[in-house]
Structure formats: C-alpha cells, structure tokens
Amino acid sequence: MKDNTLAKIFAISAAGAIAVSAALAQTTTTVTTNAGPVTTAELTTRTGSFVTYTPGDEYFTFRTTPAAEPVRYYYTRETTFVDPTGRTVELSEIRPDLPATVYYVNEGNRMIVRKVVLSRPSAVIEKKETTTTTTTTP
Image 1 (cartoon, rainbow, N blue to C red):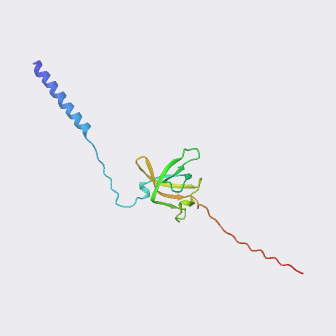
Image 2: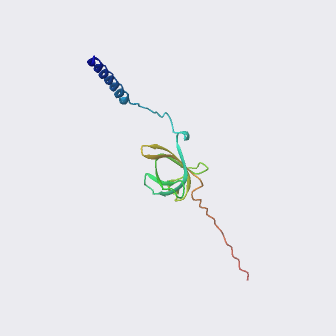
Image 3: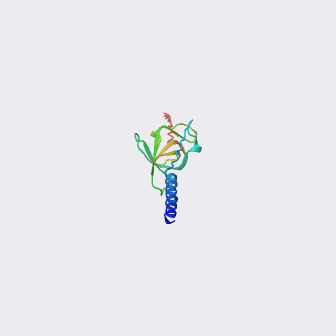
C-alpha cells in the first residue's frame, strides 16, 4: 500500500512539474506592422527648450524644465523641423534656449524624433535701410 501511495505522489509531482515547466516555457510574440506614416497619436510629446545642437551630430540635447537634466533626442533625415506657422526650418537656425515641442518614438534606448515644432520663429533678421539726404543752403 505504501508503494501505491508513493507512486501516486510521484505521479502527481511529475505531472505538476511538467505543467509548470510548460507554463514557464510559453513565449508571446507580438508583431507590429506600420502601414503608413506615423501620426502624432502614436508619438510621445515633450515641450521644453534646446540645450545644444552641433551641426553634423545625429542628436540634439533638450530639457523640459530649466532644472531638468538635458536628454539626447536623435533625429533622422525624415525628421521635420517647423516653426509655429508650419514653415520648414533649417537646422542651422536652432539655437540654445529656443523653446519647442518634440514628437518622438522610443526605439530601444533611443528617442527618435519625428517632428519638432518651434514655439516661436527662430531668428527673424529684419534689414532696414535708411537714407539720409542733406541739403546745404548758401
């Protein structure tokens, strides 16, 4: 009888071990496909200001508050930089402390920027010409 009880305990233990190992061995695979351009609904948004931008680098640093640490945001050829009116802005117009809103996605440990909207036009250079006419009377 003890052999029969011992066999039942062993059988139940073996079945439990197999069930637990099967449950732990299951994996879940999620496949996400992107059929079109990324919309702003799929992006994370941060508002703040530029800290540094160096021409030729693949990233700029940006902070959300003056007390926050600067964070690297990586941009690509597909990244668009626009002013508040929607006009495309050249990267050479980016200056430190220029306020902006950054739209990005996380890819691995990088934040890949899709769009940057400046909060105000970068540098507006207005050229004024003045003409002075002097007349002398004899």
